[in-house]
Image (tube, rainbow, N blue to C red; front, top):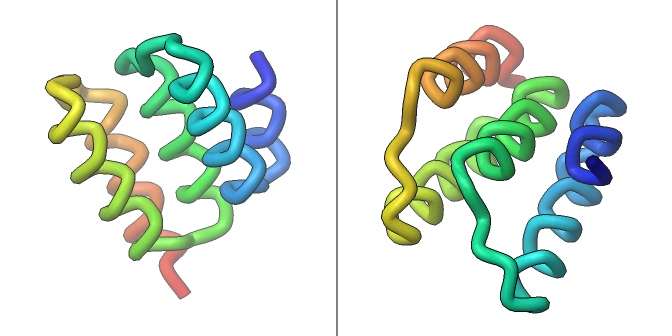
Length: 80
């Protein structure tokens, strides 16, 4: 829920912080968590951050899906 709030506000830093805190607490990040965080990067047009998160997603053995690629396209459209 908190990741989504940050994502809706375009706060990629806050969304990443929530994702990292979640993982530090021993809660595995799932596809929804990663995609929601990607949405935050899309809102602020941060291509580098989104690419890094996509790589982290793959390293975590979480497979990208249609929503992942949709978020990545949104990042491309808003890239600064």
